[in-house]
Image 1 (spheres, rainbow, N blue to C red):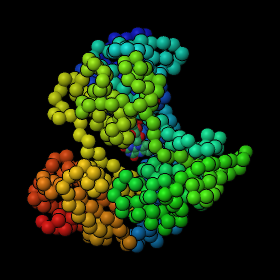
Image 2 (cartoon, helix red, strand yellow):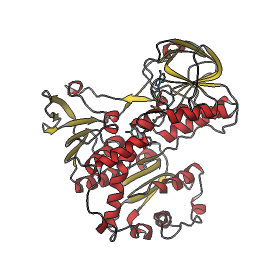
Image 3 (cartoon, rainbow, N blue to C red):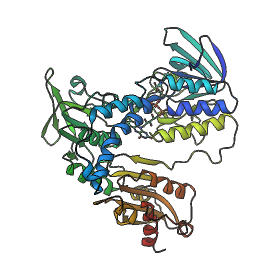
Image 4 (tube, protein in one colour):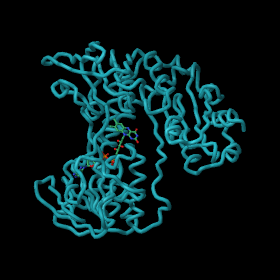
Length: 469
Ligand SMILES: Cc1cc2nc3c(=O)[nH]c(=O)nc-3n(C[C@H](O)[C@H](O)[C@H](O)COP(=O)(O)OP(=O)(O)OC[C@H]3O[C@@H](n4cnc5c(N)ncnc54)[C@H](O)[C@@H]3O)c2cc1C
C-alpha cells in the first residue's frame, strides 16, 4: 500500500526528519497517540539498519554461525559436508533488504496515518522544516508541537594518507556486496569491523586481516572480550593486528590495496573496509537556524529535548544524538519522545543502561558498566566471573564451548550494574541482565530467580554463588 504522500505545504502536530528505526518509531508512537504526523526521508524508509546495517549484516553472519554451531555438535557435525553457500547467503540478504526497496515500510506508514515526504529536510527556524523533494520541488512543513531530528550517522573516514583514492569500502559497500573479496583488509576492531571480518572469512574470503589501533579488539568492553574474539579469529585463519594503525594506503589502477602500518609492516588486499566509527548526519539540517552547531551530535536531556533550544519543541533521537549508536536504543528514544510529545508520563526519562550484542562467534553480549567504567565512576564494586562453557546448558550444545560471564556489582546498593557474557549463541541471555540492572533487583532476590536446566542462563546461579550467595 503506498503511503499518504504530501505534495504541498502542510501544518501538522509533529514533523520527523529521518525515517530510520528511531524516526519511524517516534512517528508511529505520536500517530498512535492521535497526533497528526509527517515524516521526511531522503533515501529509504527503514534507514541504515534495514538496508546497510543490522539486517543485512546479521543475515550474512547467520549461515556461518549455524555451520559453526553444527560443527561443535557430534551428529550434526558429520552432516556438514561443505562450506557456507555464499551465493545463497547473498540471495537471502537481498530478500531481507527487499532488494533495497522500502515499499513495505511505506505501507506501515500509511496504516498509521502518517504523511510521508520523500526528500531532504532542513530546519528553517522554530517549528519550520523545509524540504527539497525527490522530484526537485520545495515544501514547507510547520509543526504545531514538535520537530524530531532522527537523521542518523554516516561512516567516518579517518585522515589516512591516500585513503580517499583507493575506493575504500564502508558499511554500505560491504553489506550490499555481491560477493566477498578474496583478500580483505578491515580497519577498525569495533562491532561492525569484527562482525564483517568474520562474516567475510566464513563466506569465503581467503585472507582477512583486521587492524585496530587499540590494544585489543572491541576495546570498550571487558578485556577478556577482545582476547577471546582474537583467539577465535586466529583459529579461523583471520589475521589480527592490534596496537597499530594504518598510516598510508595506495592502489595502482585496478591493482590491490597496499597499506603501510605504523610499525612499518605492509599489508596487501583486494579491498579495504573502513569501519572506524560514525559521524552524526547533522551537517546540512539547518541546526544553525536554531542556534546549534552543524556537524555535531545534538545534545539532549533525558526527555530527548535538544538542550540549548528554548520552547520545548525540538527533539533529537537515535544515532544523531550520540547517546548510543544502536537501533534498539534509537527506537527506545523514539518511544520516549512520542510519549513526551503526547504529554504522557515517562517517569525519570530515558535510561543510559545500554544492552549491546556483537554478533561474532563467540558472541559478545554486554549491558551497563564494565569494571573499568565503574572504577572510573568512583563506585564501590566487586566483580565475579564464571566460565560460560562450564554449565550444562553449554555442554549440551556441543563440544569445545568456552566463554566468560562477568557481573559488576555495586557493593553499597547490592545490585548488578554491569554484565558481560561471551560464548556462542548467547544473545538471548542478555535481556535477563538488562532487567536485573534496570530493575535494580537486590542480589538476594536475584538468587530466587531460578534458571531452567539445562540452559546457559544457569551461569547466573554460578555467578551469584561466586559472589557468596
Ligand atoms: C554494519 C552495521 C551493522 C549494525 N548492526 C547493528 C545491530 O546488529 N544492532 C543494532 O542495534 N545496531 C546496529 N547497527 C547500528 C544501527 O544501524 C543504527 O544504530 C541505527 O540505524 C540508527 O537508527 P537512526 O534511526 O538513528 O538512524 P539511521 O538508521 O541512520 O536513519 C536515519 C535516516 O535519516 C535520513 N536522513 C538523514 N538526513 C536527512 C535529511 N536531511 N532529510 C531527510 N532524511 C534524512 C537518512 O537517509 C536515514 O534513512 C549497525 C550499523 C552498521 C553500520
